Amino acid sequence: MAVMTGPKSVELRQVEVPELQDDDVLVQVKSSAVCGSDVHMYKGKHPFASLPCTFGHEVSGEVVQIGKKVNRVKVGDRVCVEPLTICEHCYYCLRGEYAYCENLKLKYKSVGGFCDYYVASEKWVHKLGSEMSYNEGCLMEPLAVAVHAVGRSRLTMGSSVAILGDGAIGLMLLAVAKGLGVHPIIITGASGKNLELAKSLGATTTVRSGEADPVEEAKKQTNGLGVDVSFEAVGLSLTFNQAILSLKSGGRAVILGLFTEELVPTDLTPELRREKEIVGTTSYCWDFETAIDLVQNGVVNLKPLITHELPLGELKTALETKSDLSSGAVKVIVHP
Ligand SMILES: [Zn+2]
Ligand SMILES: [Zn+2]
Image 1 (cartoon, rainbow, N blue to C red):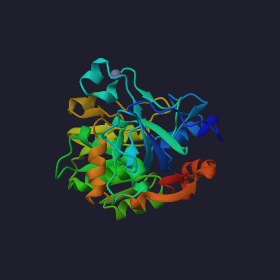
Image 2 (image 1 turned 90 degrees about the vertical axis):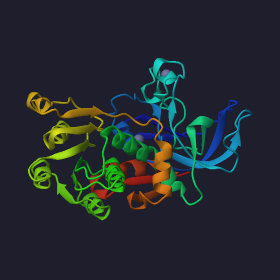
Image 3 (image 1 turned 90 degrees about the horizontal axis):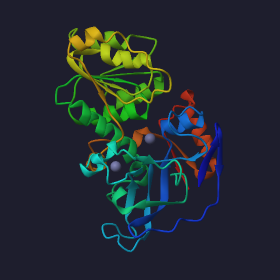
C-alpha cells in the first residue's frame, strides 16, 4: 500500500489485508488513477490532508471476497469504488444528503487506492458493465464529480457554457455538457495539448490562457451577453473571477476548484445586482450510477483522457508525470 510520508516522498509498504466486516467486500485493484488532489498532497499543499497519509481514491477492480451479509455484490463482479465514509446518523445522512455528512471522512488515514487490495463496504461499490474497461471504471469517481457539478448548474439544452480549466475535471465537464446538447462551449486552459483534446471532444472554442481573454471570448460567442453557466475548475482567484464575469445576467457560476491560496474575489456587488449566482459543489451524492450510464451508453467517451499507464512500483513517476504540465498528462493510471 502506498503512503505519502512527506512532500515529494512516497513509500510502498507491505501491510496485512484488513479483516472483512460482515458488509465489506475485498476488491483486487486493477486500475487506480492519479487525481489532481493527490498532486496537491505530493507537493505538500493539500488544504485538508495532513501528511503522512494514505491516498488514491479513483479505484476499480474485481471483487475477490465478500463479507457474510453482503448480498448485492458477488465474487467476480467488476466494480468501481465510491471512496467515502459517512456516519449514517447525522441530520444530512438521514436525509440521504450524504455528501454533507457532518462526520464525512475521505480515506486518508486508513486505506488508499494505490494498493493490491482495497476493502470497501458493499454499499460503496458500483458494478461496471462488461463493456466498460477497468481503466474507464476507475474514472467514474472524477466523472461523478463532473456529473454532480453539472447537476448543480441546472444546465439545459441550448445553454451556453464556459469552462475555466482544461485539466481532467474541465475535460469531463466538457464531455458531460456536450452530451446534454449544450452550445456553445468555451474552454480555457494553460495546456495546448489539453485544449487540442478539448477541441476533439467537441468544444466550440478553446482559449489558451495569456493569449486571449476568456471573458471577452465568452461574450463574443454569445452576442455580447455572456454565458448561461460557467464552471471554475482550476482553483485560482483569476479563474474564479473570470467565471463570474463571463456570465450573462442571471447566469450561474459553479465553483469546483481546490483553492490552495487565499481567494480574492472581484467586486461582487454589481455582479449580484445582475442576479448572478455563485454555486458551490462538492464531490458527489447519488452520481456514480449516472456516470456509469453515460459511459456505458456511449454518451461520454473517457478513453482519450487516459494518457499514461504505469505499474504501481512507478507511482512516484506517475505523480511526477501528472504534476508536469509539459507531459501532456490528463489521467495517469497505475496498475498493481
Ligand atoms: Zn479526485
Ligand atoms: Zn453523517
